[in-house]
Length: 147
Ligand code: ZN
Image (cartoon, rainbow, N blue to C red; front, side):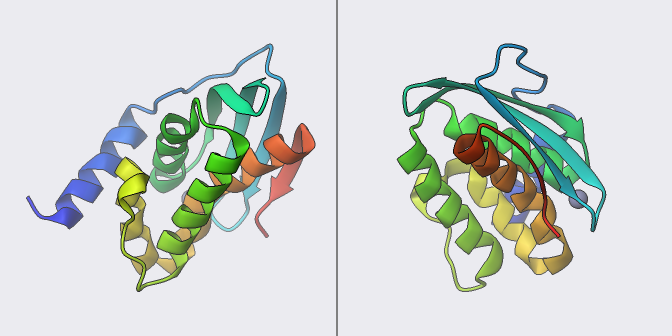
């Protein structure tokens, strides 16, 4: 199995069986994101323990890329603090937008998103969940649109 097939399988798996899907009623913060280009909508719910994301869930409707990306993101950020999450976001953003960026070992399964950069119109689908999480962490509650 080559890398591309592996990446495709990760995206398909997380789209069909999204991890941490659902809402958290007692969330410390939440944000709603919308990608008008594709029609993706998702909400991110966060429970904080000081600077750390103790729990995170998401819900919404979107394309396979947006759902898989949100699923992978929730797995990757749970238990991490704001600084580590910001670093991870920077790495994911570079992976999605800079063709020469090799997947960093720290990205783990998030490396599967590197396939997205062959389809520039899909980059916003993959980054929507991250922008929405940032809004939740920075503002406590927000609605964002990637346009
Ligand atoms: Zn999309």
